[in-house]
Length: 149
Image 1 (cartoon, one colour):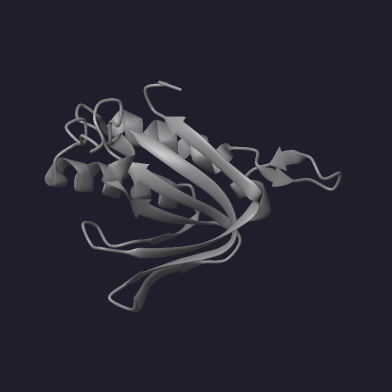
Image 2: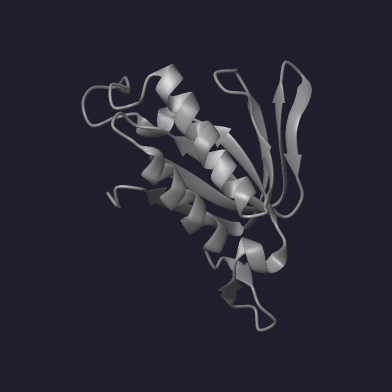
């Protein structure tokens, strides 16, 4: 399971011109589910993300987590994070989980976030979405539950 995590001042996702998810200060998490990912991957990433110390303390150092600052999360499913661009010019998505498996693990990931008492907004699974991100910093991090990077 892979995630791109961005610290934001605000963010929202729209589908067909209608806002389906919106947050204020917090994190946008673009989440890709790979073949072979399990519930443990969803739990690991959720716990890692809510505890990442990426928010500034009183000295301006990144020492505070989402939990510390009362931030929110916008979680958006994005299978293209599993795209392999090493050969040719067209990405291969054979490493991405199928839609049913991916949605189940995405939903489980969101449940873990909510269990941590985080306000979570989401995109719409398998929809063509427009994501508006007001990146703060910018701070952008890459996470992989298999620790590939």
